[in-house]
Length: 105
Image 1: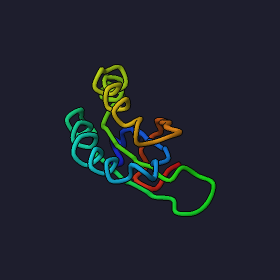
Image 2: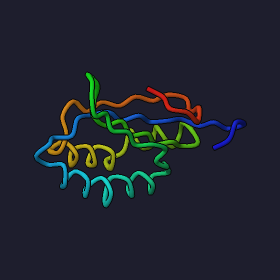
Image 3: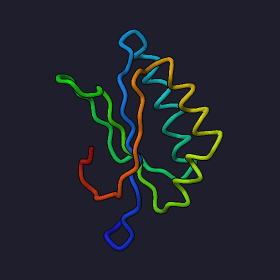
Image 4: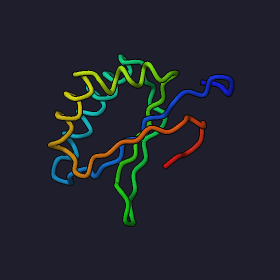
């Protein structure tokens, strides 16, 4: 991504269930991230909040254009990934922001 074509960032936030942290990690690394990459997204960041009143995970994925984003959000793959993620997390939400190349909430 560059300044001429900044793209979009998809921000996921949620809390990982402590009792399923290992299974969560395995699922995200072996399935979620590779599937997102197959759909045209690159992981831009993964943050863990250790203290405070905020979701304990914030993960960012970037893509080049709106068509790629819309394709993902309308896909069965997106629905299936999040259904498979659900047993490991609570309070899942996502939002789309313009990609700026910096930390974004």
